[in-house]
Amino acid sequence: MKRAISIAGGILSITFMICWLAETTGFFLAHRTLHLGLFAVLSAVLLVFMKRPWNLYLFFANITVFSIGAQYAKDPLLLLLCCLPLIGLGATFSQQQLSTTHHHKVIFLLVVVLLVAGLSIRLTGLTSLEPYTDEYSHLVSAQALRQYEDTRVTLDGELSERYTRAYGLTWIIAQLFALFGESLFIARLVGVIASTLVAILLFSLGTRVHYLVGLISAYLWLFCPWVIAVSQTVREYALFPLCYLLIIAGLFWCTEKKNWWGVAGIVTLSLFYALVLDPASTFVQIIPMIVTYFIYYLTQRLLAGLTRHWILLLVATILPLMIVLWQVPWYISTSPELNSFWIRQFFSEAIWSYPIATFLIFVFFLCGSLRVLWDLLYRRLHIVSYCLVTFLFFLGFFTFHFDRYLRPRYSFVMLLFYLPVVAYGMYALIAEVQHLAKKVPATLLLAAVGLMVFSPAPGYGAATMSEHGYVPITDEYHDSYNAIHELYGQNFYNSTVLCSHCYLLLWNRDAPLRNNTLYVYSYTNPERINRATKLIRESSTGWAILDWRRHRHWASGLPLYDFIEGNKSVQLVDSTNGFDIFYWEPI
Image (cartoon, rainbow, N blue to C red):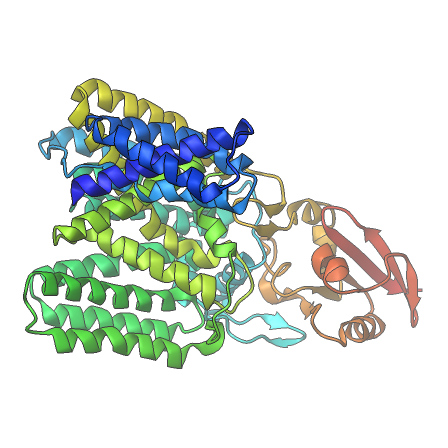
């Protein structure tokens, strides 16, 4: 079987390379099917007489040709051929395993060095970008919680609704504010520390397969630009991955120890938090993770011939999924509709920011996926099997059933399960190379290539980015508010009223939150212009600070010039840094 699959993979590789060369040189038979058939037969004959190491050479040759051919293929058939050879790549790998003999002290030191480097990059330029809009929700709520023991703030002259989404994060930030003072650095430190700790769990879980899988997983997580950019935000997306992995690690540990009370406790607490305590946040994503874990565990027991608890496990698998469909229908579309945005997020430059790394990540992911399927033929499941199933579950859900607007942050959770599969594919390639070559030179060569391609440099660039607006790596919009605040900040708080969109200007470190009457400009409210002009007429002086997206691009707003409203003179004071700033006073 293994020999047959290996030959098939080589046939596809050689077939594609010859077809691509024929296409680019202008030589192509009229009967394309006959043409491909002849090449396939020729490839099979050549491969039968080749020794096994040629499979590895075909692997490298196919990567090179694919990277060129995928960009210049001229018709759908060749685009299909670009993908077909990749199906056979993982099959060329043998069951050769790397030795597990290693020096624990060296591995420990490597992990420590990686953690220190990853933490240092995240701390560098931690406040170079000002918050994007949703970060202000946690900042203002934490500030209010510390000052007034309440997460509500004064808006439109009345207390606003309490902001409860990911309340645990708000509470942690409030406690840090009480200890160290209010600052953006302290608030973002939560995500930075949580993101660094995730690498420890990825390493620990990866070592269940091989210590190299754990090391590579931790390395990719620590220096991935997308991970670094998300970790530097005051959002639950920076914190929840740590919670997810702790829960999954707990399930693995409890099932191995046959501690079913522990399993029940973990599942119950997770469901209670996701559905009762924090239903508005993305923590509900833990439920599919629990579902796929039970699917993984059930499959493992069935492969081992142990079906004693299969009914209980089946119920535990289906019930959480039914709860999700019943409890949180607001983001689930019951009618499937293809949205390739989420596929492009993981198989394009969105994560790594440059093509060669993205392409190789895809190849390694495919190799890891096929190696998992190969392991399944040998009736062996492990943590990477669980990661692959969970990733494909989320990818299918987001691609066909996600009913929210497009923001990469929603799919960030998938990276937790994507990178271990990539690491497993890299491990499989290293095992193959060491099987065919001298171990030390081959390992050093692969490590050098890996460091050149997946270097920390892009991650450092993401961490120190200071250009406001839409940040490419996260697709979030960061308003440049500090420049405005330095020019006009004190005037804002001395006026009668201050008008802006929700939360943006509430976050200030110079005055208590409720010193002023704050009014919200909502671009979705059809009465927004009438509300704004009424506010101008009824208040003696005031400022309106409106960002361009809400005031210009998404919906029309106040005139972009000086005007008279009632007995008030309204001046357009500034129109830079992404804001339109108005000031009014009596004529």
